[in-house]
Image (cartoon, rainbow, N blue to C red; front, side, top):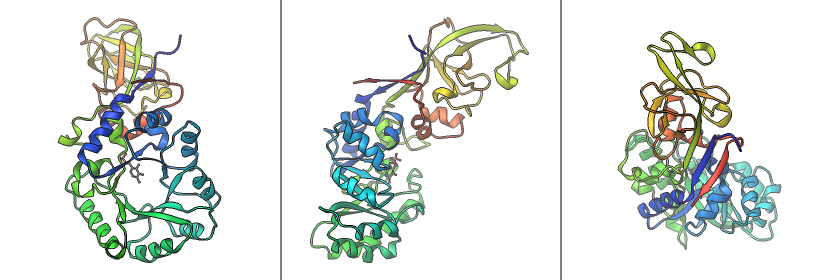
Length: 365
Ligand SMILES: *Cc1c(COP(=O)(O)O)cnc(C)c1O
C-alpha cells in the first residue's frame, strides 16, 4: 500500500541515450554528468548502468562523489566546482577524483599544499559564460604554474557554453574561437597531446566542432532535448523518467462551478473533473497553468485550476470511460517534461531534478 504517485526510471533508455551521444562523437571520450543525483534520476543506479559504457563521471561536489564511491563506483569522478577548501584536496585524491580549477583561489590552494601523489586537473576557462573559469589571457601563465607543480598530473583544458541551444548562434561561435585562440600556444608548444573538453549536450548535438577529446553530456542522457525546437539529432532521445499517479476521484460539475484553490478555473459547460493523487509536494510544478496536458489512459486532457500540495484536477469531459484507478502520466516517454515545463515557466531540467523524496522511485532495466 502506498500513494500512487511514483517515478519509474528506465535505465536502458539512459544507456541508449548515452550510446547516441557516443555515436555522434566516436572519437571523443564521455564524462557522463550525474550531478544533483543524476538530474533526479538516482546517481547510484544511473552510474551502475553507465559504468561499463563511459570513461568517467562528473558531479558538482565531493559529497556527491563520496556517495558514489560508497556504492562501489570505480571509474574516475570529476568535481565540477573543484574543491571548496584546501582540506578537500586530499579527500578528492584519496577517492580517485579529478578536480576542476576555475579560480585563482583554487589555484593557490592547489599549489600551496603537499599531496602524496599528483591530481588530475581540468582547467576551466571563461570564454563567455562569465560564471566560473579563469580569463583567457591568464591561461598560459596559469597552465605553466600547474605544469611545474608536483601536485598536478594530467591537465585537461575546458570551457562551458552559455547558449549552445541556439543552433548556429553567434555567442557559441565566439566562445569556440576564444577557446581555440587561448589554448593554441599551449597546444603548439606541448611535447604531448593536450586534452580538451567543450561540449555539453546542446553542443554535442548541434555543434560538431565542439566534439573534442572529452564530451560532457548531461540532460541528453536522461532523454530530454536541450533545444526548444526540434533538432534531427535529438529526435531519437528516449525520456528516462516516467512520472505517474492515479485518478482517485471523479465528479460532474455544472457550468459556472469552479475547481480548486482560489477558484481560478470555472466550467464553461457541464464538466467531468478527475482528481489525481499528485501535487507540488510530489514535484508537480505549482506554476503549471490550467491547460497543461496530463495523460489519462494515454489521452491528453487539460489541467483545471491550481495545483495543490497532494492533488491536481483534470478536465476529462472529452475523454470516454475514465474510471477510478486509471493511470495518469504527468510526464514521460509520451509527454515530454519539456512540454509540461513550458506550461510552468521552467525547463525540463528543473522538473526532473527537483523531484522530492516522497515520490517512490522504481528502476527498470
Ligand atoms: C551541467 C554541466 C554539463 C551538462 O550540461 P547538459 O546541458 O545537461 O548537457 C556539462 N558541463 C558542465 C561544466 C556542467 O556544469
